[in-house]
Each structure stands twice: as C-alpha cells, then as structure tokens.
Amino acid sequence: MTLFTLLDYAAVLVFAATGALTASRAQLDVVGFVFLGALTGLGGGTVRDLLLDRNPVFWIADPFYLAVASLSALAVFFVAHRLESRLVTLRWLDGAALAVAAAAGSGIAFEAGQPAPVVVVMGMATGCLGGLMRDVVANDVPVVLSQGELYVTCALAGSLATLAAHWLGFGDAIAALACALVTFTLRAGTLARGWSLPTYKSRPPRGK
Image 1 (tube, rainbow, N blue to C red):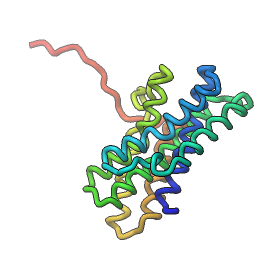
Image 2: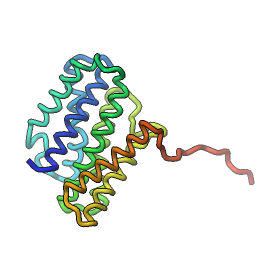
Image 3: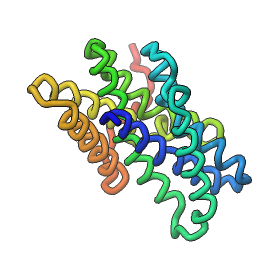
C-alpha cells in the first residue's frame, strides 16, 4: 500500500465521520448517515481523479473505500449522542481531514508530473470539495464561504508546502507531512484563535 493510498483512506475515514456528524445534527436516519458520510468522504477525491483523468476513480478501482466511509458513518450513528458538542467535534475533525486530504491531493498530482499550479489546485480540491458537498446537501452555509474562516487558504498554503518540500529535495513522506502540518496549523489557528484574512467591506462612493 502506497503513502498516498494510506492518506486517501485516512481522509475518507475522517471526512465521512464529519458527514455523519452533520447528519446527526440534521437528525437523519441511518441511510442518511451513510449517504452523507460517503458523499463527504469520497467527493473531493472523486473530483480530483476526474480532473486528473485517473481511470478508474480511486473508489471504483478499490471499493473498500466505500466500506471505510460507510463504517465510519455507522460508528458515528451509534456514538454521536455521547459527544459533548457535535459541532465542535465536527469542526476539529474537518480540520484534520482537510489537512490529510490536501496532502493526498497535492502529492498525487505531483507524483503524476503535473505542473505546480495543478498540484496546488488538486490539493485544494481534494481537501475542500467533499466538505462543500456535505454542507450544500445538508443546507448549511458552506464552511468554505463562512466569513472570517481560514479554510481554502489552509489547503492552499499546505499545497504550496508540498511544492516547497519537493523543490528542497525532500521525498514524498516529508512533503506530505509538511502539507498536513501547515494546513492543520492554520485551520487550528482559526478554530482556537480566530485567525482570519481581511474581509471586503463596502464603502459609499466618493463624490466628485
């Protein structure tokens, strides 16, 4: 099993748990848990593989990914009620999944010989799109669009760290670790310390 296969499995597992936590907050049935978990866990990687023309898509090549997503969602179905705050748990798990998925996406694109801009976009897509699908289907405000949230920025910085590590001569493992650490550190800063980028504020037009 390759490094990027392991990262994909980890991302699917944790992202599926966030989808299931979202299902618990919406009080869905067990099928809803599995559906939202699988959508979240597999969505970003599916878009990545389609854009990179990886044939077949990773979870079709290895259907065990579906089992991982489903089992993760089912586990949350039975334990979600024990959590003190499902929203807080969801946000921190989502940050961890974002970090792992960005490392997987950017690493897979780099390994495929894609140019730097594509590597960065694939890291962002793999990390962000599953959560975006989850939030849209659950009728929540997508976290990628939430005011004052570092989210896409975290995946962008992590993907750039992948490139930087490779350009410095490090191998796949160090590059993936650098990506995950940068991504998660920035996301944790948002969650724990309120880190954010300046937001647009409208101003009245200037008079002549």
